[in-house]
Amino acid sequence: MATKKTAIFTLTERLTLAAGATPTTSATIDLGSYVDVGDRQALQIHSVDFISQGATASDAINASMPTNSALLTQVTDLNRGGLVFANDRALVASQALRIDGQGGYSMEADLFPDNFGKGSDDGRFVVNDQLYLEATCTGTTTAALNVTVRVNASIVSLGAKDFMAIAIQSTAADN
Image (cartoon, rainbow, N blue to C red; front, side, top):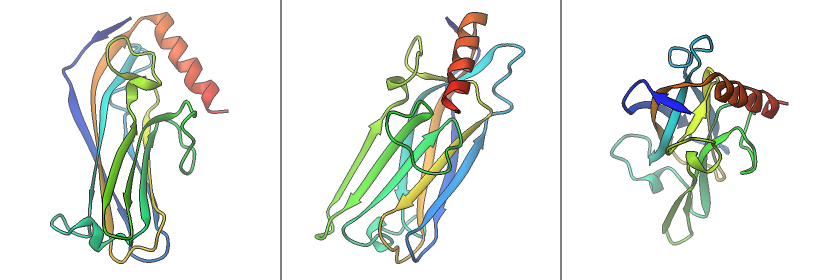
């Protein structure tokens, strides 16, 4: 099905949620130099890591997040313009970080790339030219809040039928 062209490498993007109100932010990771339709070249995502930090790299997260709140982050391969439900085919990975009234933490990465893909080994194939990142905090933040998304991926060549099936599936999910 897929022939690996590279070893695993890491793509990284940081989202910063501003202080005040109920912050939401989005960003993209450009995949244009990794995906090539003519050569049936795709990106195979093996895993996605989420790292949450306060206003600076050394600040504790509870200095930015109010109690009884949640930080929600998602990675999709189509631009949905906000957070999506778990049954959305565009969803690649997501996480939730919760802080309770006593300052306790609970973090869950509730979706891994291989759950929704047809990856032959351990990943999800992406043939779109962007990954879309979305983060929101359910409470009013007291200081800036940062989430770093680390995508571990490799470049693969797909057979003509496999590439076409993934491209059609992605286009159908866009509707």
